[in-house]
Length: 441
Image (cartoon, rainbow, N blue to C red; front, side, top):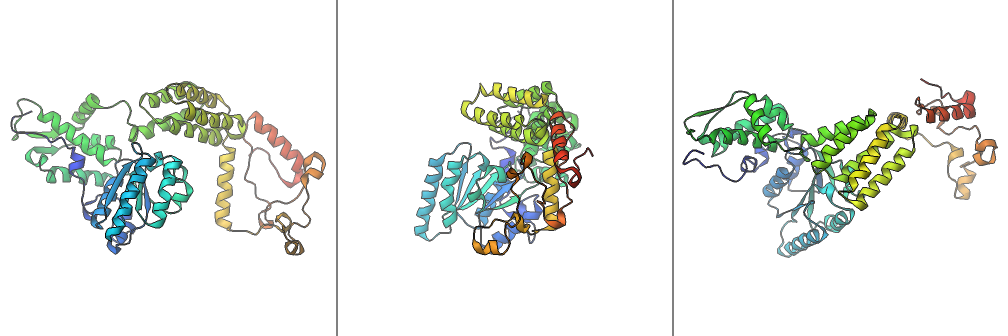
């Protein structure tokens, strides 16, 4: 490094972290003029919410800005490093502030999807009574990862990956505002490689920019008067020298799980095991992988082999009990079984069709003969009248109408072309005959 020029230990992404909503780049639908979070800050009324979005789009920064601009005490916990004890200690600190007539503090929990049920349960009382205002951050769908009682007390706001213009604006700001980079003559001749690698992640973009600049400035002959010109080839070269095998919080995380899922769906056990190994070597959460296998078993295999869901569910339970390194064998066995299994998405397609119709037709009344009749009044009104109990008939089947009258001709399930569903098709056609047609479409 040239004498007299010293890069700080603090990363560029931290040095450039915005301090106000006006400095925040991206997420205009949340922080732009008239948007929901800006309204909350300006009104002084803050409710608990969860920020859901990919890495590096500003979840932590946004929580910090909100607490700062609203002059709220700010506590931060990481779900990776904190337990129930840490949560309770933080809540106790927040309780003590009530005696000083201060506004309730913001409790920010990063990666809240990694909190166990008991950890999430420990938050409920404090959130419900207003001891803290919770801001959670997650890269996973909170509907699956956050317990219902906590989710019902929070709004969910979706953050998007940063756009090309957002990322270019960050590069310009770094070169114009950072006190260290301003001392250097930096010209970005080509930006495509930096943007492509960042994948919409601001932290990754700024780290890449700083890495390339540091590499150029490390030359013994370098002087601050010499211009640093950044090109695509230069970026690729530096990244290849420094890139980790697997970034479990970044773009590669999503790319590799996508390749894994598509390999299982495509019935290629060799590719499935390879991508599984990539994830395991990179330190991916084994429960994350097992959850995806459960989803795969029902979405892509379904009724072609109902045992697939049983195996995937047992896999999830087993890896939770066993842990690594032995969990790798269980995940491998399940991945190979699912990849080698016959495939059907008929259950997936059926529920999508049914939900689409429900959204279009609304709450169509339940036919009277199918309604529950626990009281004499309901029976007098015709609830349950003329219902035919299927087990009282031959083959445990009786022809009847089970859909609302105006939807009687609707069909959602079409058996796929595989041995198991061929049997299902034949049985349904034999039972329903002219009433319904379960032929191939």
